[in-house]
Length: 267
Image 1: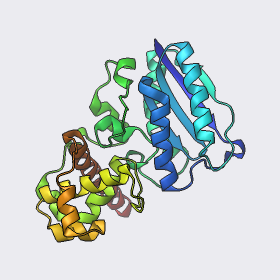
Image 2: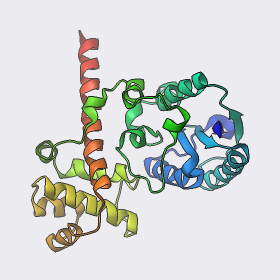
Image 3: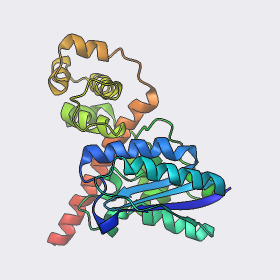
Image 4: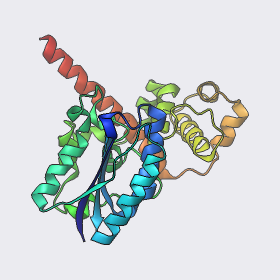
């Protein structure tokens, strides 16, 4: 096995998934379709980059499947996929920074660590997508987690799960936003499907663990106190709850970084 890169682009360079709900759905579909061979991925603007760690027949099959399912959800026509071999360890290492910093390459005003289409949250434990087990460290066994953080200008030490006292200070609305990002659902929760139920349960259990009131959780979720109590008993895994706390730490780390950069520019 070896790394392979799949690239998909649109005809006319128009955005594939121009709105946040569409991007979140596209990420979930990509992860489900690309399979457990996925090492890296990035959806941004008019491009999709996927790096697989597999054999040649598998990458051909996965590329066809990705092209088919993403065409069905894209706002514009997607051209046929292009497959290229990742020829060396150096090439693979270069792809890490290149794919994680796609927002900068495309001039998007979003920090690369918070971009929905990036796999950075998955690499640091700030997202929980079913079936995703990124193979990056098989393709680059010497790569260290701190180096991945460095690619987007962050320090790994700042991305440890946030403490409950700090979560309480952020409030229920921040917990809701983080929980929906962790599962790549929403950001609105108007549907009554299983994925939205899981987001609500994550919000309730994280908020109540941080000693936020049941009434505040009911307010942000738009449900009764009795419903919040039921959500607190829903089966949610510890890794999913941890992802919410890492996601909140990530958001705060980015905010501090941007504040420092603003001060430097003002100076």
